[in-house]
Length: 394
Image (cartoon, rainbow, N blue to C red):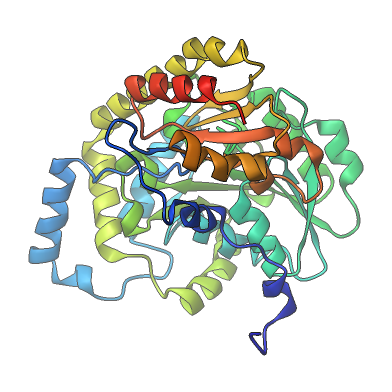
């Protein structure tokens, strides 16, 4: 037994991504049926060649890239993101409202540390992103589940009912992880108004914004008067530029909030990855067409999921949500998803995550649900995935 161990950490479950890797131990996948890994949403390919060449140039020619930098990130990157986001959201965002972090998970952890402490409450939409729940658990913050129905969209009236004197924030993700759904702008405006009127922060994780299927502005929250008193926006460069290993994320919030965030970041990482930040800046300035191509490919795969799903629907499966990198499904079997997921590794050569990783303990719906992260399989891979799943009979 490990002693001493802080009780909140002891109560925090292990990362589902880490835990699911253990299901592969001792399993052999024949050449004619290789593993289909749809468990993780992170790109599994390196950045495009042009960006890798720029990274190499930076490493060789820019001595400052190997030193400490500003805690809140490179001024040039903050300014570029402010400029680009102002154009994208038809708003006026300043560099002083932008901070760069070591990935979006650190953006979430750092800003939540300025909002909620042990004993406080934070409303998380279910199915939730497991790392958000893990942060709450290890910090003694109670994650209040906001249930969704089959459309996977949060209900405003239910959210209002859940607010208590201890509530500090509402957390939303769009396009959603794990559900894939894209929240309508009107719904986001209503949640913003609820948070503003009740004195809460609205934390909006838009990690997958580059892969939204819509062409119009995804929301108008940055155009709300005094938005920075209520809204905190989170983003990741990992998905757009495949910079997962370089750990570069961002947040947009009030300068006063970022002053507090700076304390956390200085304690944890001192500064974001300097080479990664320069790579992200170069990507923003040079890779817009490449990112557009990546988005198109993801939308093609999304459509392949929708078009191919009838083969599973005939077997009793249901497609609850599909978008960004994810399809969230309901399976028809008596076997609970917490057992079905590791069984699929052995019997079908498929690695995916059970709904129990994204729902409160004891929620029976979770045992009928699975998340498919399809960003790393092409149309042929999606067809093969559905073929294998259609054949299973646990």
